[in-house]
Amino acid sequence: MRAMWIVGLLVVLLIQVHPSFASETTLTISTGWGSITDQFAGALTRYTEKTGVQFQSVTPPGGVDPHHESLLVQFAAGTAPDLLFVEGKWIEQFVAANLLLPLDDFYERDVDFSEFLEIFDSSRVEGRLYGFPAVGGGYRVNAHYINQDHFQSAGLAIPGPDNSDAVDYPTLLDVARRMTIDRDNDGMPEQWGITFGLGWGVWTGWLPSNGARVFNAEKTEVLLDRPEAVEVFQLLRDLNVTYGARGGNFPQGTAAIAFGIRANQVAWTPAIGESFTWSVAPVAKGRAGSVGVLNMNSIAINRDTNHAEEAWRYILHLMSEEEQNLRAAEGLAVARKSSAFAYQMLDVPPYDLAPFLHGPTVNRQTMTMPKGAAWPAEADDYIMQVLTGELDPGIGVKQAADVLRREIAAMR
Image (cartoon, rainbow, N blue to C red; front, side, top):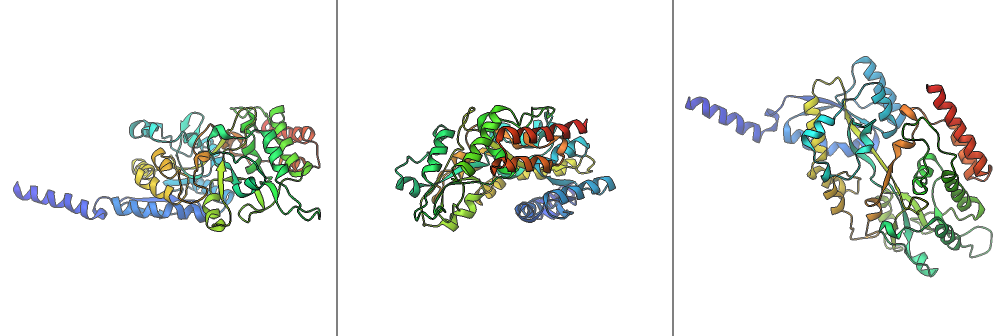
């Protein structure tokens, strides 16, 4: 009996000292592409060292659509991985095809939601959770980056970082106009008031603050041409065309304001250095106040995996404070409150990242096409013509909305 006890103790010690004794499980995983794959690499290595679980990468070709289309082929062939990265706009399509394991019971058993930001709508479809929001833009993905030197030179008040500090649309328009300066009167400004993109990923970030939406909650009705949305497109058109206030390059100091994403801060800190003082402020407020956009992508579990519990334990590893702290220290978006707030204040500009972490949000998935369908290029064309001054906002936005209505009707 004593000999058996000693052997048992040795086995326990070997498992603790040598993780490879703890598990012979190999999980297949698709971790996205490019920098997304790189973001998962450290966590995979640390989990293997901790548990002995091995990972086999089955990552398809890079890029949002090729990656997910290849995953669909793997599901059809029965070769899809146990764990997979699912970009936000695709999760509805994967759920509709019954490919992902519902995780509500796992969450109820193992997770205290109060420890996390209100970020899980990124992984929720029709009220059920199908993943963990592991990678992406963050809780509030956008903010206004502020060149404080330009504001001070113009004698303008510098917007603060709290949500209550957000400027309203008329103020933003006035400030952007005043900060657009043609010093040599050659018709080309040397400094612009604001810089922002014109594509879908940007203009959807302006809609929530005015209470505007693309669709209703069920994505059965198009709301894009309602007055609150048209007002937003009118504002963007005015900034871009009517007053020529949009342009410049923020890190180079030629734009006073940048409507930018959280990830910009990581790249811009070394690029700007000490060339000027800068900060971040909440997105401008419209009818609904200053409302951000929640934009995260999920790590999910194959519904037919033979290793559901082990796959879930890896997700718990990603959710752990240790892993979340490591991500937050790199300037990446995280879900855990303690990790996010620990890195809210920086020792260098922009100093306070509160605009990305505090205030109401709308989930970007509410603005994607139903069931992960492709956004129609024709609708994009009409919107672009509005933003570049070729179409009146009331007319062009209505035409874009009608395209969306036809697409939705065709899905029924």
